[in-house]
Image (cartoon, rainbow, N blue to C red; front, side, top):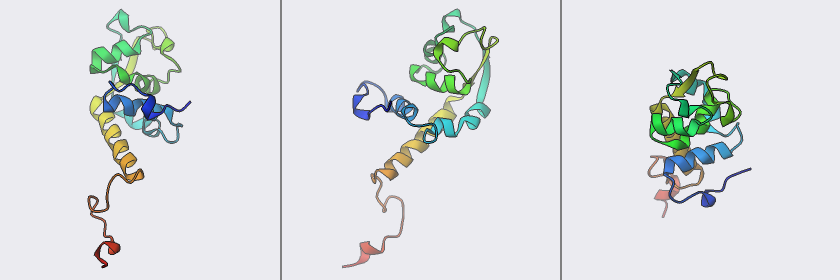
Length: 136
């Protein structure tokens, strides 16, 4: 099921929209799936310090990152099929949380690639030699 950009809530931030768009893509096209090992490498191992996090990765993301839209990344990195597996018993009281800097780096890379694919970046801004530009 592909999510259309226009159908997403207009109040969401650009990063939130981009996360949802990425997870609507196939795993071969999703920047987070393609860089899963990097996400794991740049993660911290945390313990469940709050009981309100059980079965609620959205609340964890709100408390830890101050952004709730990152919960699909938490599920991906911890190999969890759904939010109902995000609990102390299933994860032995420990789970991985990728660093926000690496997540934002992946999002910015994907936005650049998206703009290039959509021809929203001109050859002048990329410093690419264009011989037609000099013809009269």
